[in-house]
Image 1 (cartoon, rainbow, N blue to C red):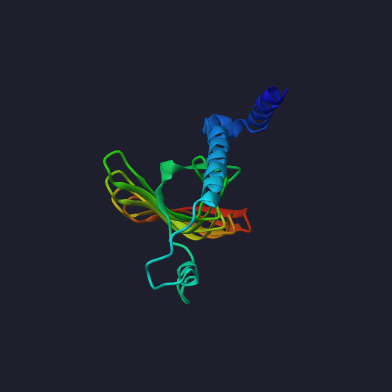
Image 2: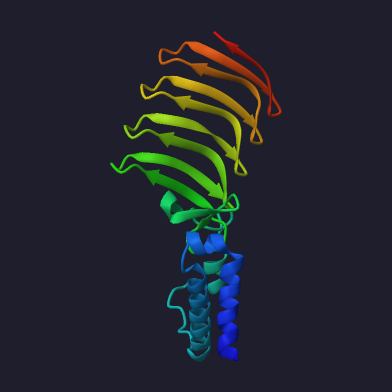
Length: 200
């Protein structure tokens, strides 16, 4: 009966989490394996005596960060190493929201996207580039939502569009330009609601 209860539990978990099963096949089994390995090594560690440190530093000095220093290093990974679940980004095969620096590259090796995540949400300045290396767009995120000014560019590096957001909602004056830099259209928004459009 115990054999079948484990199988039933695995099938039940996969049924309740179809996105995890499809997006990251083997995630659940890897989690089980990691838990088992942690348990085995935890048992082994209890039988092995630690050797005394040869350095002059005490354990407390090694564990505690010095004043004014960040408690952990900033992690930097590529965009294809993370997945999005329920509007939150995770490192593949992990159930902990990712925090760190993100980069993505075009097939020719040129930088495509660069930005930061905090607790699985986009934060700070995000920049996207064309295949040629020309900047395509730039703007700010706050807790996963566009916030503040956003600028989009043509391939010739002239401004294509200027937008403004407050907490993910369209706000203020939006402008569209032609390839020569002339304003061709303006739109006004307030708290996400469209007010007026002017075509030049």
